[in-house]
Amino acid sequence: MRHQPDLFSGETPDACQQSKNSPAATLKLAAQDARLSPGQQRFNRLLERIDKLQGQLAGIQALCDAHRPVYHQTLASLRERHQALMREMVLWLDKRLQRKGLSALQKSTASTILCNLSMQLAAQGDEEMKILHDQHSSESLAQKEQSAMMNMRDMMEDMLGEPLTDDGSLETVQDVFRAGMERLREVEAAEQEARQQAQARKKKPGAAQLKAKADQQEAETTLRKVFRQLASALHPDRESDPDEHARKTTLMSEANAAYDRRDLVALLQIQLRTELTGTASIAKMAEEKIAVLTLLLKQQAQELENELHQCRHDAQHEFGLKSYETLSITNLHRSLRIEEISFQKDLAAMQQDLQQIEDDKYFKRWLKDQNHLSETPSGNIFDDWKY
Picture 1 (cartoon, rainbow, N blue to C red):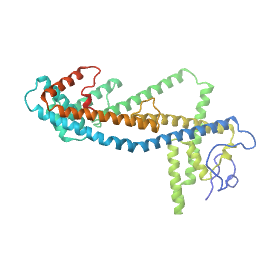
Picture 2: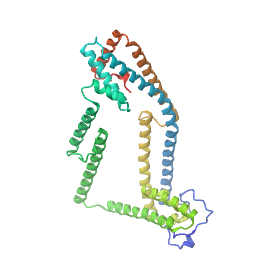
Picture 3: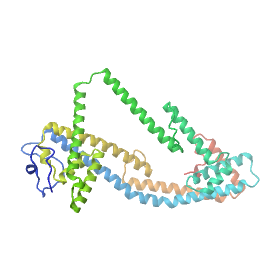
Picture 4: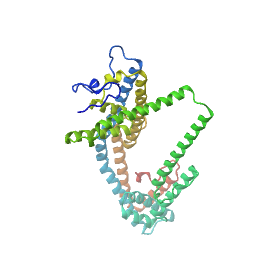
């Protein structure tokens, strides 16, 4: 394999070539002739922090991947039973509303329950429920969806102070919400940029700001330099040997992905694997060069912190954990058990309702109770029949 010049030294390829037997399991700098400098120590601490964050991310993902099948398998049959009972109630109410013996208020309450339940089932693709909903509602599902979409659009346009796109792509509430939030983010970013530019015009940047800007520019240059050296050494089209072509294709794909996410650690690890540099070469760098790499590592650590926070939030939302609850096997199993028990209680109550409403006196009392629930500010209308 032809060796490229080491990115971090001015030596010739022969002088900087590493032994193929040397391990490349870590990027941590080791003391050479003296103790590590403060800059080298910071470099190593950030590597340790990144390793820890990546380990935490991998741990959460592995935990979620292991729990997800158990979670869905446990609740799948309960959800199916829940939908079946909802469907049974809709069909029973439809038949009962065709008979006499109910007051106008009772008919209205029964129709509202029917529409509420059938709308949920229609959202799951049940065409018969869609038809029943439209038969008993003054507004069809299509009209309700259009009205909801227009209300969301009005709200978003009021917040923005300008109309949303009119290219015909906004057909659902979700489409309008996504487009509105994206536009809000664009407006906020533009306003922040304008404020920063205004401040920059009013106040001449100080030495610290100029140095920070210069350091950031040098960091970006260094990141590009690492990637370009890899791209030059690993370009698969320059390799005629099939095995080497396949190996370089894989490595080049890894390097592209690492560069896209600004993952300096991954790029340097590929450098080590391809013997384009070594930790000894990095350790010999001048302090200002170490500082540039350290700045990139600091930014990478911050991005990992943000990703870890989002990953935890998403997992808590997916599996029903409270925001203050840690992600652990114990908490996940406990939360699943609580959800399972709650499902079972709801199903038992729903089954009991279906059995007892056959008695018209009970049915009318039940309608009255449901109507009272709808009038209670803190109550959740028809809560036993919603999921």
